Image (cartoon, rainbow over all chains, first blue to last red; front, side):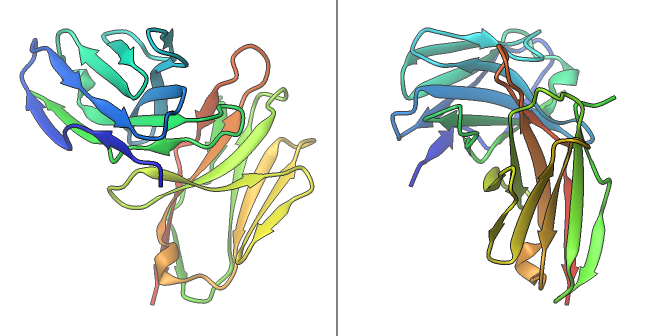
Length: 113
Length: 111
């Protein structure tokens, strides 16, 4: 079974803090993604990566950055957290982006006070 | 107009009922279509792909209508365990090759 593991299920941070969300997958997938999910807005793509050290902006990259130093690990960084970044963050990976099957982690619920 | 729109829900149905969800998409160049299922406080998981000729997987049937730009999901003989949010997902073609997620339709199957 594919396993995508996100480091923290729940985080509470203060405005202006730097936040790291870690994601690790164990199936040697090339592609990895970070989404945020908000009520009424669905899943929105923040960043994705199709290879080590490669990254591409998604639909809402502002206020975020990513790092992919190893194939299995994709990190999302909030340089200076703001209250509008309170959300559920979902990491996903896929072997073949063409097929449309993404394997998601359980999510990290971030609250910024 | 949203790129992918779904029935607002929630759908409250009794066990054994047949229920159908529709989803419309705005980009006629969209290439592939999927239904994902998301249980409460869980991650989304692929339920089934949607093929041009329509496809069935047990009690679930997915259909695609390219002319009208909508896809549908039919669930027969609903079970309590079918209660979840169903996400319509559209893969755009061309250079973007992105997956666009709908906001989801909540199904609650009642005993």
